[in-house]
Length: 510
Ligand code: FAD
Image 1 (tube, rainbow, N blue to C red):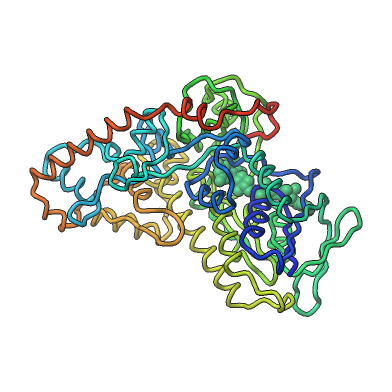
Image 2: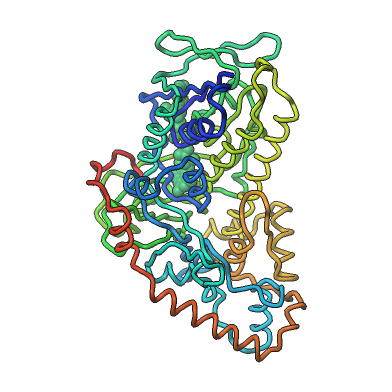
């Protein structure tokens, strides 16, 4: 079966590498077309811990990967000023506290707060938060009883270097690469399936399955198949980003920072050789000149290039798989990088596609059940991430700022309203077996944005109050003491994967 991937950004090369690893080469022939003339979006540096599973699946050596991509470790995301100016919390890649008497930790924390002894911020009960605040990094402990085992980690890396890394990996394992520009598509007159792609060079390429990784253009899924766009800008009004790298002048923080601004938010992503920065903003509330000023005022060191503007809209295609075309990456949807979810969504789609890949021998007749299942999973992934992002905006107290007043008052998706109300009524938070986000992620943002439950799971009352107070005190000091023993991320990286000489500035913008 011939699989043709259109596009060689992160989506295209993650797809090529993932499928080459997971599908038998005897049955599937993979070709990727990319156009140097068009180029890639060139941003996308912050990830979630799942990327490690993806790299491990490919058998990639972690130290080599970090060296090649100027990568750093990431324990979470710090949100500054999202509830009100000046406040800050971390969404950690790890657990809050320990479950006692079979009850999740947040119920004990709420009970303690309601019982009148001050448990301190719930953030103090996350080891990942404490390590991040100490600018430290070490690998999680393998001993599940250790407080140092209660976190995971992700990476910051140069997205252009990662795509190049995967390109080398995939082409060494049989993926054929064609440099060229697709200018036309040949259809089957009866089924409407794509059969051939015509390139600018005049060459024609035939295939059975076409994966659209053409970025915002959505050449096949949106363009040829005409799959409708579901617009989510009513909930996520930011539609522009300015990106600029700068020199690093401070410690190598093991977290991404997202700082709320009047018309959106700025990001800070520390790599080994530079810091990636950007301002995601709404053109309804700010023009490009003001956005540029805000961004340049927010960065810590000398800019290494002129800020670059990107335009986008929040939303997704109604379907990701139509006939024999599957959209992955920006071709299938876009959600702003507030929680570093796009690369995860690519990874999830690649794994789901490999799992549901039609068996060779059926020509290009597609089983509608495989298509329906892929689309069901795609919807779940996108819709849940959307709710999570919208929560950051909606639960704010930044009164008097037009963007923030608007998002505080907007009508929320019903699915999100339900989650907020459930949390307020019971301290419960969603926890999904498939997809994003885990319970602790929800808790970090719900508490971080200033929401407080009225009640907690009464099974927590089985722990005598004095015992609860003792355990909480002990846990909090164990976390602080252990985090204090961790190695500074700078030193850890210097020992584990010292950088190769920096690439010339602006090979990839952010
Ligand atoms: P692209 O990188 O645009 O690649 C498209 C490919 O298609 C290119 O190779 C192009 O040459 C090719 N192509 C297009 N048309 C044709 C044609 N006609 N013929 C042949 N080839 C063609 N994600 C994260 O996970 N973390 C982040 O921190 C993050 N930050 C972001 C910040 C911003 C401002 C934006 C806009 C996105 C961010 N993302 C982030 C998302 C991330 O950048 C993308 O999900 C990721 O790079 C995948 O892009 P892509 O491969 O789908 O598209």
